[in-house]
Image (tube, rainbow, N blue to C red; front, top):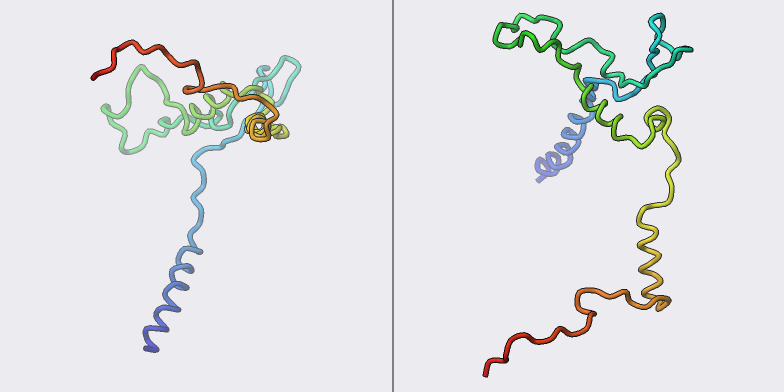
Length: 149
């Protein structure tokens, strides 16, 4: 009985300790964005202008290292270098953003999108508005078939 009690009290602690020492894996790519100068001389915002680019796209291409596993079957000639990890995802996110500024600094959240719906439901439940209608609220449809006798 005491062995069973000791096992039941020690086993959960051992399982939790085993999970606590695991380190989080580093990300394969940077999710951030940076301004890149369009001038030939610098990497900061310049007089000539700058563009916002994903940090993941500023890394070296994924297949330029020519590893030992590289063969004629794994390297496609004429296609060029492949994108760095995360570059396509970050670029697509950049294209979908409403404002490019949001990618760098963000903005305050507004009211929840459910607020207008919740207000309309409250007005309906309190009797402040007449029902709008629905699938079964229209005028009765004429019967097109004869009743079966």
